[in-house]
Amino acid sequence: MSIFFIKKRKFLKLGLAFLLFPFSKTIFSNGNPYRDRFQSYRQTFRIEPNREEAERILKNIIRKRKLSEGLIELSIPDTVEDGNVVPIKFSINSAMTEKDYPLKVHILGMENPFPEIAVYEFFPFTGKAEVSFRCRLRKSSSLIVVAEMVDGRVSLIEKYVDVMLGACS
Image 1: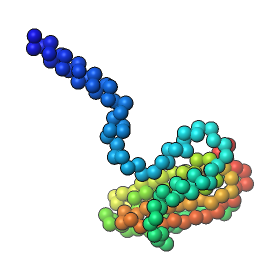
Image 2 (image 1 turned 45 degrees about the horizontal axis):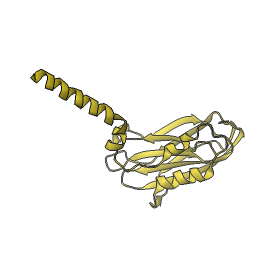
Image 3 (image 1 turned 135 degrees about the horizontal axis):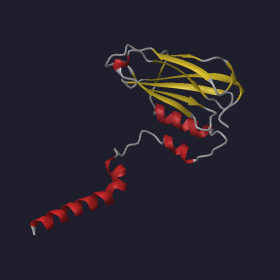
Image 4 (image 1 turned 180 degrees about the vertical axis):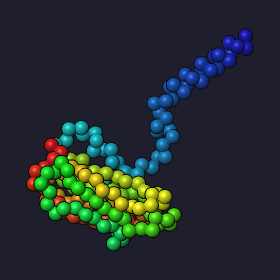
């Protein structure tokens, strides 16, 4: 008789866990989303860029913090022939210690259909906060790099890139 109750209890526990599984993401989330960056991915086949969305994402990253200058060095060509391969190189001037390193670096293309191009996370043991990569730009626009430092500082650098043949279409 006791074996039946144990199986019944296990069955009820598994059933309850199975029923609560779809709600686990909302139950165990921190309830304080960093920002609604996945909002743009709901529009699967967006064709035209949305500058207001790019500005909203930028505003949510900065969050009324004072901007620091001279933290970011950005290297991008002024004119790019092909928007499919835009070379970008940036470095963050920091000591890469526990008290001075960039938490996140955001790259935004203001005229792209999906403005957030990349987000890089760094740690003190990374050694250097320097990245070079290639991205796609739809058309000539401003490219913005925002660095969030561990001590709360935020730095922003913006550069206009002239694209001859656009991508992202």
